Image (tube, one colour):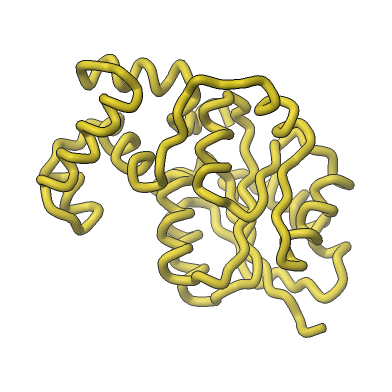
Length: 210
């Protein structure tokens, strides 16, 4: 088996060190880069085309779902394992809906993390047992698409339709359509209600809590 190359993305050095230690226990895995913010994670993935990206769901500068979408775009063969400290059902359900290759919690034990990485590196998908337990109870929060999640984050950041359109390289009309679908899907009637609902249900990455 050839060398599998991994990039670790997390804004906390102690977490990166821990993930490095776990990955280095797996045969034929080489750590080729570390990123401490979302923009670095995108840049390194585009440049290095790694086999595996471990992605903190709450990265600064570019949020987790935005990084996920961009890495899928620029390095489609990269397997992505998201590691999150936020365990709200809506947050976890959205990652499942986005078809991430692996989903772990920051509280996941090292042995299970190692197993998850091995499964994903072998071409499979892995969801931590804690995540499955949380999602085992029915949730009425509808999953959002990756693009809807991007738009939601940018709305929460205070961007207007024109600014979001420029950021995502789409038309303002397309953004307005996404905003309308978000409000209809979540059954809210104002931006304030949208953001409040999204925060309550864990549909926004809450970096300060991760």
